[in-house]
Amino acid sequence: MYTKILLAVDLNHDSSWKTALPTAMEMARGGGGPLHLLAIAPDFKMALVGSYFSKDFERDALKHLYAELEKFAATHVDKDLNVEIHIAQGAIASEVVRVAQEHSVDLIVMASHPPDEMREFLVGSNADRVVRHSPISVLVVRG
Image (cartoon, rainbow, N blue to C red; front, side):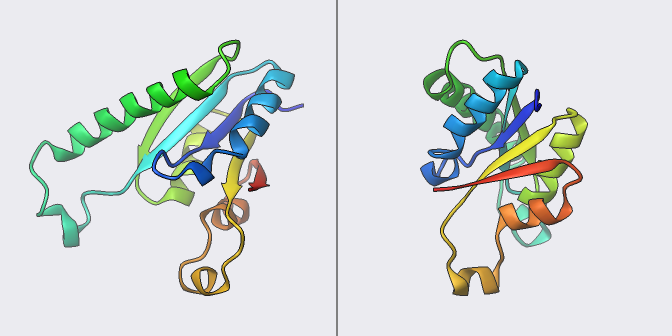
């Protein structure tokens, strides 16, 4: 039985949670544990883009992301579930795995878009990377 469930969401793309969130809520409810929601911001410190942002941009962006994820949880997650909010910054797949391990979750739930051969060839899939690198079970929900 899985008790601690992690759902990675991209608040800018409904497809990252529309079908995966109901599954994650059902799993969390069945296991009696918390539902961990995770949103990931890009790494603003990359040399290529870092100089274009103001000094406080990163801090403000992360605070904003946290607030948006709280609003998302209040709007979309069933009220009877215990929800824990997490934000991270960096590469999506590695941050999902890192946060899952840090919080000792039992199951990672991720949405996956229908395969697009050219996109997959060029950049790959975050869900695929998580599945390949995670020591924790991963449930990929097609939508």
